Image 1: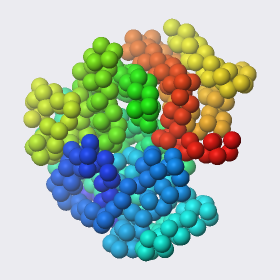
Image 2: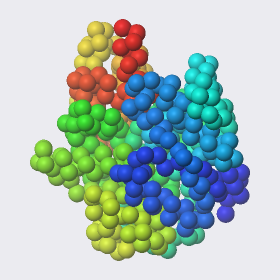
Image 3: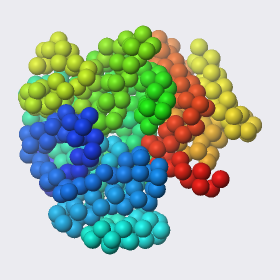
Amino acid sequence: MKTDTKQTKYRRVAYYPGCALEGTGHAYNESTKVLGSALGLKLDEVKNWNCCGAMEVKNVDPKVQTYLSSRVMSIAANEMNAGVVMAPCNGCYHNLKKAEHDLAHDAASREVVERISKKAGHATYKAGQVETIHALDWIKDGIGEEELKRRIRNSLKGLKVANYYGCMYTRPRHIFPEKDQGPGSESISKPHFMDDLLAAAGAENVDFPLKTACCGGAHTLSDSDTSTRLVLNILRAAEAAGADVIATECPTCHSGLEMHQVRAEKVLGEKTGVKMLYFTQLLGIALGLSPRKLGVHENVSDGVAVLKEKQIV
Amino acid sequence: MRQELLAQAESVLEEWVNARGEAPTLEMSEGFRLLALHRQGARGVPSFNACRETCREIAYHYNVLGVKQDAKTELMMTMLVEHLKLFVRGKLEVEGLGEFCCASRPLRKEAQSA
């Protein structure tokens, strides 16, 4: 078992699910909590959390987005005495990291955050008070592959997985100073934490060169056809790489892949059969948890059949 | 085949650079004009970095195919070039594609400075 400081720090973290995990990403929320519980990791949900500012607020006023994200971190740091905030959604993770960066480097952002925080009646968040991590960091550094291997009950052996990280997990690179820091750290250009964890659970990761490729997500409503074609190419590439499933670690990526898979068939007549599963669902299944408990039945693409076919469930 | 695919990828980026009113560079970056073109195309447009890894993967697959011909690698390179085409086509239609996600830069900033 790992005994480094990260393992100790990540054992109990403030949990920021974000809006998507209460809606389209409900299965990700459930599977994250159930997986954490099975692994002995504690989650304390951030009290009275708010939207991170997502895409919409960022469009109107980026400093208000910085404030909104800072409020989440302020509650974690000042009201819950937490040192680590874990966000499973790439959008939330990205926005909290961006706010952290802005507050550390931009005086105007600090001024706005201080002014609104005072008006809202809560302590102003200061850069460095908490460490924001993704669910992948949480499992990778909080548990590690060796410990994970020890706990596997249903190996994912025989399951070929394409790991799709999407774009916000690593971009823009300057807001993720902890990445690309040599062995053990995550890579900006070729992320591998999800690959590492699923390999530890027995899965066979396929070589998938579109793991951080754009899915047109932000324009899924304003330019649906571009999004559908981009997603279709990602799905086809995963299939061509031999994948049975695409593992995801973001509710927006996940629902985007699922929805555009359906849309590609309806609008373009292009059918693909690859299934989408959250990495938390796959790890949970490997730990012996029931697919239902992990919300697999909530996914649009039916991953149960392929898991049965591989005799994993 | 790999030369043809690389040339296609370069021509896609040339279109993007031309659309911005610049002359496509003939310089090389890390041995690839494609990467130099990407760098040129991303100047002042951080969201264009959404296709940075796609370009780097195209270069990688080009190198792999130079060592050993392999149908799967060739197919992957084809799909990478296809992704680049789709992304740039999307950017040419809606310039803000990828703006929020990768660049983290608000669209309004440009409107305000105009």
